[in-house]
Image (cartoon, rainbow, N blue to C red):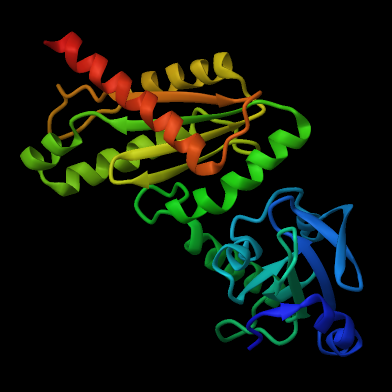
Length: 294
């Protein structure tokens, strides 16, 4: 398998690459753009890389951003309505901008699942979707996982920067979940986590927003093109929905959460900085609530 490649190598062997693969393209995985190559340099085009898959949304399991971040080759299956492709993403060395080469091979007629008389196209698409979701989904809550956060958030930050739009992050922590685990057991704690995940999904826009389990009882919610006031409305809605969750083992328990909100608009922040700002505000809210209880 290819490890790392240079632009000079691509130029030298481009004809061979096209002979081996159905699609060969260079992409900037952060800006989600296809690049044009000229010798040892690349320039950004107006072509959006994920538009190739014809569903109008950023790929959940983006191996090109993973390839760029970890500087090694990754592979996955992806599809549009008619074609299933085996995608290989290879890091490109010595470039000034984030650059990855994607090698796409048509696998529609070579991938078979199960036995019997299946609608092969539909079957393989379902399997591909399932595999890609497993990589980036939290198995307990069905929200995205921490890996997804650090692969997707940088792209949303860049999109907000280019479009000069607001991007708001909500960092949320379930209050006293440890006490629930200690008294009723982790099965009840897991039930709470699942119900909280369901409540969050019911309060955000499923096409433009996303939510992930950051770890333990902490959740991250990304609201694209949303200012602080809009995020506060969403936050209030989430708290109200979580407060309505009934725990069968003790119906008297009223779940509460601590929430921190941070909007990125004029000052540009990295993914880590944006998460830290929202995290700090969440802990401020938690400390304030503890003082009020006292």
